[in-house]
Each structure stands twice: as C-alpha cells, then as structure tokens.
Length: 359
Ligand code: PMP
Image (cartoon, rainbow, N blue to C red; front, side, top):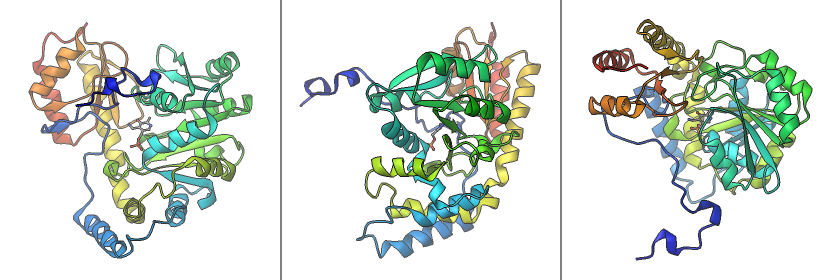
C-alpha cells in the first residue's frame, strides 16, 4: 500500500496534520463554539422541502453566482448593502481562503494578532502567503498604534483583525477599526464570526467610508447552522469580483444555497438564542471568577479560563466525565463554548469536583 511519505507531497506540507478539534460522541459538547440549539422542527421541515423541490433540477449546476442567497444575506446585514457587496462560500473558512488566494500568494504577507484563530496560518500555508503574527497586549486587546506599527514593520497585503477574537473573546472597538482603516491603505479583513453575540457595534457601519475594509461573517454560530457550511463577507463589489476570479466554478451547492435561504427567512427565530447564549457565557465567567479562575473578558459565545498547571489533565478529566471542551489558547487556559443551562451546570459541578486545579 502506498504511504503518504511515498507521494510527491508539497515540501511545505510534509509532516503537517489535518486541522481539527477531536470529534467525539459525548453527552456535553462545548469545544467548537457551535450553537447548542438545533433548528426547530418547522424550520427543519422547510429546509427539507426546499431540498426536495430543487432535487428535480440536480442534473443542472447550481446558480454559480448564488445571487438570491447573496441578496438575502445583504438584506440580513442591512446598511444599504446589496448582492453585489456580498460574497458567500462554504463557511467563512472558504471565504477567507478566497481572500488569501486573491490577495495573498508567493512574496505577499497576511498579518494577524496572536493568540488568534488557529486556522489562519493554514489559509496562509495553503495559498503560499507569508504568515506574520504580532502579539496582542497582555489583556489580548489590540489598539490602533499596535496594528499600525505592525503594518509599517511587515508591509502585509492583508491585515486580519478578529473581533470578537477566537480563542480569547476579546472585542475591538469600532473607533479602533476606523482609526486603523484611516491609517493604512492595506486591505483590512475584520473577522466577525462571533459578532452577533457581541454588545459592540459591527464594522459593517464603516464599509461605505472605507472601500478596503472587508467584514467576514458566518452562519455557523449565531444562526446555528455549522453543518450547513455558509460563510460570507461584505465589501466593495471590486473585492467580491476578486473572490469570483479565484472560486471554483459552482463552489456552493444548490442544497447549501437553499438551506441558507430558509435559515435567513427565519433569522428572527434562529437568532433568538443569541442573547441567551452570550448571557450563558457571561454567567459562566462570573462563576469562574468567583472560583478564582483567571477569566478573559469575552464578547463571544465562549469563555477562556485558566490558569491550570496541567490543562491537558483537566481537559482529559472533563472528557472522562463526558464533557468535551477545547485545549487551545495561551498556555494554562481552556476554552469553553456556551451550551444550554443544563450543560453549563454539568460543567460547573465537574470543575468543582476537580482538584487541585489552579496555579
Ligand atoms: N473565524 C473564526 C474566528 C472562527 O472561530 C471560525 C470557526 N471556528 C471561523 C472563522 C470559521 O467558521 P466557518 O467556516 O464555520 O464559517
């Protein structure tokens, strides 16, 4: 049997592992920032009916431009956006890789602020784009001066600012994003995968004034549609055109487009749990502070707590009790996605039973 090492794999991919958190079938899954509430039976049936009705046309390719879906997404975002300002793909992961393919590449760089989303270096690697990181401040914030200095030093084509940031949950103020956009002519991608959970205003408000600003979003979290694989961005139509050049033809299946449109038609219902989930995360953080954990200020549907002398032991201990969280972020910290009140209660009791737990 042929082995991977027998293949002419690209040199920079040798020894690399596929990205991904463990997918384990346990009772309490709080490791990938999913929304714990599935779509209601009525929405499920509508999704199924939409797929049945398009199945008669599955011998044909889907709408390559996903125009109806892009128009629905523009409507959802508001701010006077139209389909021409929206790009959509299989999760914001694919949207980002379109951006890196179009604007990165050999001899170019993307700049990020660490600790941040661990997929970013992979988009860069896959597109042969230089990956440059600058550490966030001790409290994981970024400010205008930090970002502009890093841009001057590294001269990237793309600057990636994540707010709320994963894995810390840290938000970046709109004023800061505006000052950064004023201070540079680089493309600035604001990854707002968790924005619906945040109490801060969105960078969408700046789009009409800053044509090099790109706001990336996903339906995976707030819309509870991680399995649907729909991510999108809002930006100037020229940026959308650049993504259209590098996408594979018919990249977004007919089923995906139809399911996303049903979800958007029911955005009120699907987004109904967003405030409750943010509240669940904030309540967990308050509880953890009371137990003397170090807790990072978060605006997302997840919390980062520490410091554990041996975080892997705690992670494993929780897993042994049927609770899956994420071993990620700064040394000694663990990330917990907000679950249902019942799941969070199980987690809290399990943490209380573990000892010794803190540094
Ligand atoms: N950006 C950030 C900051 C994320 O945390 C995630 C998912 N974990 C994504 C993008 C990608 O999400 P998706 O591909 O499901 O849209």
